[in-house]
Image (cartoon, rainbow, N blue to C red; front, side, top):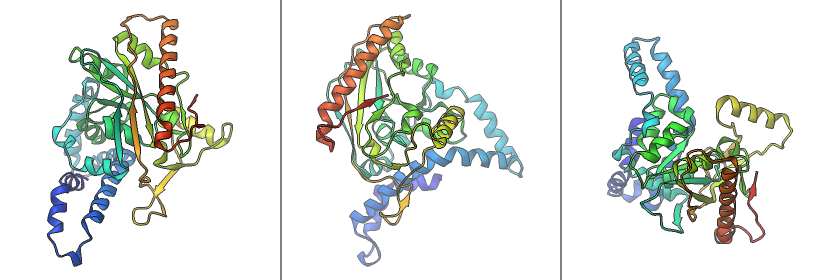
Length: 344
């Protein structure tokens, strides 16, 4: 895995070297770039889906071999380092500057549009919508700066936790977010995918549904920290994969929700395209454009013990702001004027 990532991280130099070879034995530059884009996206998908489980099993297996000492040393270090993700993580400028992320961005492509300026004298909580299956837009646009908060369970997995932290990703829990919003006084920001695992079950092409109606914890936190709320919507996030959406009340839907509560993530039945043939099924996402719109900040006062009425007030303001953002930009990015954003 390391050497594969290293090769992708220096993709521009590799590509330049390969172009010096005779044309007869190597594809043209545009095809090579497309191949590198696919590999960049594929490594992220495989890392997110399998790296944690694979490295956990490998660590257990190493205890049963002559390499048990290496496994023991790593486990001891893991225990000592356990709270690092809650304290801002351990960012790596080298990992964050990999050329691989440029190929990752250009595969879809992904772009970010800022509609309003943000004051460095304020702190911000960005609410990202929708979740999608694997949050490609959130990771690409916010994985390095500001901090993107994701499932805390990922940071219990050996190696995966270090990979995520090196890219600037942190766990979505109270301790971590408190630290990120207060470490430098002002000018701090954290991105939370509000809908979480529950929302991923409603992500499919043509669906504009966000899980928000009963998600009020981020609003309460914003009031307690005096951090402004910023709605963010990514058009095209749900088009990355096709997913089988089971109807409410079915046995499969019940199983998905049950596993979500037990594991912390939703087991989605999805597919993209194949690695070698675009019309086949696989785990490579469809290369549909993803455009992330950052909306207008909602100024939030600092109240250490906000009442439920105050939380409800700003929650309603946030929902209205998100709906206005969606309605203003939907026709520019492939949706119809009649399309509406469903809040559940």
